Image 1 (tube, rainbow, N blue to C red):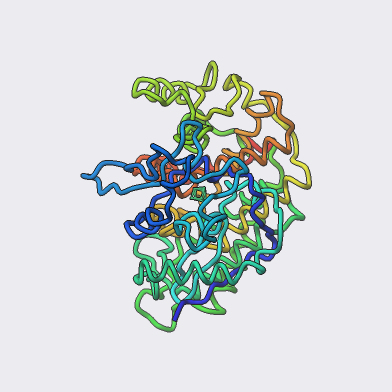
Image 2 (cartoon, helix red, strand yellow):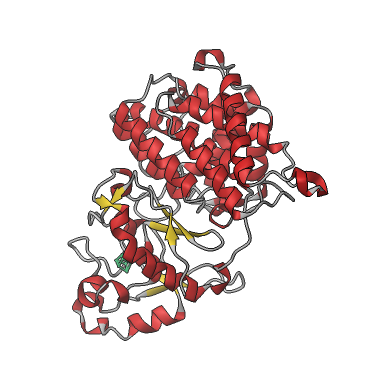
Length: 428
Ligand code: SF4
């Protein structure tokens, strides 16, 4: 029997708006079974498909590469129609499409005895909160969960994600911590940047805890005791966290250099119609990386929509964010936290606390990018919304973010207190 789907984000709406952005932006992998199914659909009789390959090879065979849907010269999937609708869906229904197309923008995360439902904010309709409440999509989500389980039976009864190396607690305790963190992030009485700094303070306090009792069952902290402890530590973190951004020291030189290098990965686009031009050649990639490290002059165009502005523009304070944008960002972070889309299998296998820090890192990155877009002439709200979509496109998906050096950079920023400083600095 399929595991139930839980944690429907009650604060989120979605329906496909038919913008076709996902069918232009992504390389969709297809299994042998999906290829065989599409090949039997008779597209060769359609004039539009004369001489058009449906699939392209993805990666090298040595690296275990397979096939993906092919794209036309304009960057769109070969099956995307001129009306921005999928031809396969229009002719044969949703079930005839590759599973990856059907599931997007949902994200199902296995959590022991159930699936947690998340969403990709790279989708404009998700970021825009457009459509019906997510609960209305539960029947589809169950269908996708069944298909994913059939594909990878090992997801059923998966082991809990460690809090940090060697610290394993039951799934139920992980979910208690998730609830506490989501509550802190949802406390809109505080500015979002302070909520994040408080969560980072909580992570710092919790990292040192040994919840397993060191072999003494009486000292094991679990269940209600754990909830109580996290609550008390959350209050302590709140008391210790400076109230305003002015009270937080400026990030140091090392912090800013490392931040820009991480940011260069979060704001890039490597395929689709928004592909950047700066990283087209190996030399271009080296030059772009060194300019991000230097942080002076024009920002390399690692994403087609980046305007031709300088690094200095991104250091100019932009003021407080509007209520609407606070709403978008709060939704974004609560959905990511509650669906567990920040650690474990959905974020390159990073442990729980490290995953929370990597999610916190996206906050200054989003604000950095929004400042750049504003400097290029975009309105602030639109700029933050676009920045969330760009950053979420990479978060947990861009393999560069899963490399050891990126994980090391994040640990460096968090352990030196630079992460909290960056959160405050770019929220000015
Ligand atoms: S198969 Fe259909 S849904 Fe999937 S990318 Fe192509 S056009 Fe989009």
